[in-house]
Amino acid sequence: MALELLGTFPFDPEHQALFRAGTLVRAWAAAYPMLFSTHDVRLAHSQRTRHYFEWLAAVLLFHTQGLVSVQKYEFPGASREKSATLRALLGAEVCDWLYSRQAQRVVQCPDLLVFNSDMSRAYFCEVKGPTDQLRLSQREFFRELAERTGKPVKLLAFTGRKTSK
Image 1: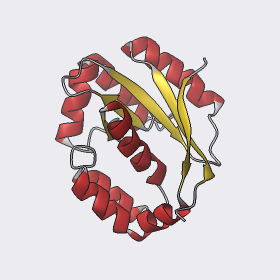
Image 2: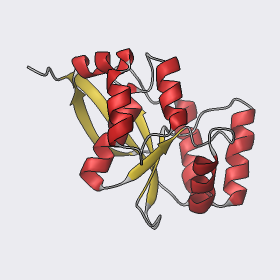
Image 3: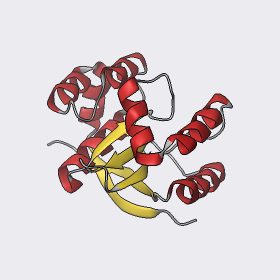
């Protein structure tokens, strides 16, 4: 399955360092409460070397497409709001299927579930950093996910490095 490439973008390593230090996490959480929940903030603080590219993608999609996104939506214990959003967009049957897959520790869902304010448009977005590659198991699962949900899975990649100077 060929995923639609939303784009390939450079990133600023200084911003990544600020994210890992927690400074950018706090700033983005305050600036974009519609994108980042308290659960997302806790994860970003506890897993400092992860999530930068997912957060950057969420901000980018918000500014370029006007779309909101949620992360870690496939885990039923993440938050009531994320579970409600998932059910509204995909239905109870698909949610139960996703939850059962995650309980079995199979391939994780795409990084973001992206949608507009009235939920009439939605897609999944897999985010890849400069050293990440799409695995065969992801491609197979993403194909099944798209078929079951009727929502496409798109790819957003970060490569190269843009300096802030």
